[in-house]
Image (tube, rainbow, N blue to C red; front, side):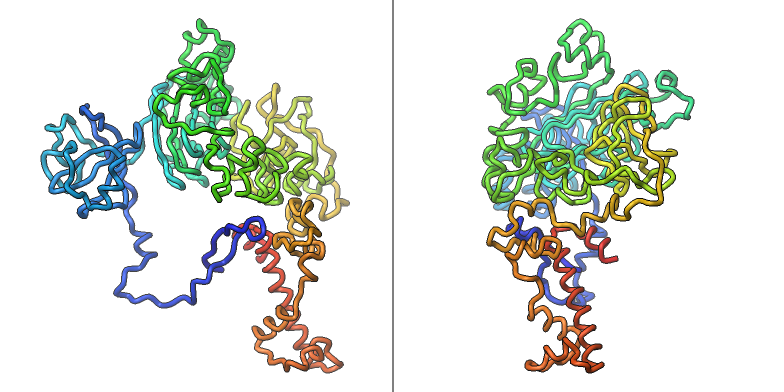
Length: 605
C-alpha cells in the first residue's frame, strides 16, 4: 500500500512498510521527482579510439557525478581503470584511483593528466590529437562490441546492466557465452531480438551463482531468432543460415553484486566441445575454440579449487584458483563467487549461503541451512528451486508439488502436477530450469503458473500440446509423456498451486515452540508459532478495528457488544468489528509470511 523495505531482522521480519507520512500535494513550481524520473535522458556512452601512452582508449559511460558542472564519464570496457572529467576548460583522463578525491575537490588543481586540445561541450566532440588519441567516436546505442574469442573485461554496479552485441556470421555452427565474475556476482541475459534484454524481455536468463555458461547450436529453432517450420530439421536450418546474412546476439550483464567480470564468446559445436573436454589438441585446432583452454571446464573457474587445465592466461589462471591473479584483483573465496570477507558482514549473500562458507555466518539466519544454495526465503515462494528440491529442505515446501498425486482434470493436462519424469518413448526428461542439452524458452519466468522449475516432471506449459510432455535427454528434442487419463474426481486441493499459502512455512518446522515468538511463524497455520506468540487475536487488535469502523465502544461494555447479548444492534456491530478484525489479521499474516508485493496482491484480489 506504500513504500516499504527489507529489514535486517530476517527471518523474524523480512520486510515492513515505512512511515513516510500522508501524501501531500506538491507545489507546481517545484520540479516533480516522478516527472524528472520519467523525462531523464537514458545513459549515454561514447568511445575513445586510438592509442595513448596511458592506454585510455575504450568505451565510457556518463555518470550522474559532476566536476565543474560537467558529468564524469567512467570507462566500462575494456576495464574500469580510467575516467574522463572536465577541469579548467579541458577534458581530462586519469586513473580511477583519483576519482573520489577529484570529485570531492571539484577538480582541485586538475592535475597533470592527459587532456583534450579544447573544451568542447562534450568530451567526445573535443580534439584529442595532442594526447595521442586519433579519434573520439560516439557509440549512440551504448552497445559494447563483443568479438569472437577475444573476451571483454567489464565492471558493473549493483542493479546496473551493461549491454553487449556480438555479430554472428552464417559460418558459425553455434554460440557459447561464458560470464566469469572476478569479484561480486553478475547475471546473464540473452536475446537475438531485444537489443537491451531485461529480466522480462530476455529470451534466456541465468541467475545462478558464479560462472554462467550458455550454449546454443545453429540447429536450434531459436538460433538467430528464426523459428523454422515443423518439417524443417536442423541440417536444413544450418544450410539456410550459411546462405543468409549474419545476425546479432544481444547480451546483458546485470550486477547482482558489484564487481569486475570477464565475458567470452565462442563458436560452439558439440564435436569441438567433446574434443576440448578430452584435451585433444588436434581436434581442438580444427575448430574455433569452445573454451578458454583445452580440457578446461569453464563452469569450474573460480570454484576455490586449482584445475591445472584452466591455469592459463586465457582462463585468467583458473579464475584465481591457482594462486596467481595476473593483476585482476581476485579475492580469497570460500566458495564460488563468495569472498571470505563477505562472511559476517551483516548482508545476506546468496553465493555464501553454503556449508563451505559457514552459511554466511549469521547474516541470513541464526541456524545452518538445509542445503547449499537454498536460501531460507525460497521455500514456499511459489517457484520450484532445484537447490531446495530435496528431502533436507522439505522438497521446497509445496513449490515442487512433491505431495501431489497423479490426478488432474484438464483434458490437455495443464493442471497435471504428478511425478512422471520419462517420456512415453522411455527417455529421461530434462530439468525444466536447465538449458542443456536442449535450450528452450519454457521457463518459470515465461510460464509462472504451469508448475515448471527445478524438476524434470512432465508438464504442458501454455497448453501447447495435447498432453503433458518434456524435453528429453538422449531422445528427440521433446516427447509426450505417458500419464494417467484426466479425472473429474480429483481432490480440489491436491494439485492446487495456491494451496501452500494456507500451510505453515517449511522453514518454521525447527523453531516452532522454542519459547521465542518468531514472527514469520506467528500465523494460524503454524498455531501462532506453536503457542510462542500467544493465541493470535488480542484485545488491542479488536479495539483498533472497532475504532476504524467508527464504533464507540464503552470501556466497560465492549464484551456485551461482542457477544450481542440478544440485542440486534449489538450483533450487527459485533459482526462489523469481527470482519474488520479478521481482515486486519489476514493482512498481518500475509505480511509476516514474507511474501512479495505481487503475491500479496494476488491473494487480496
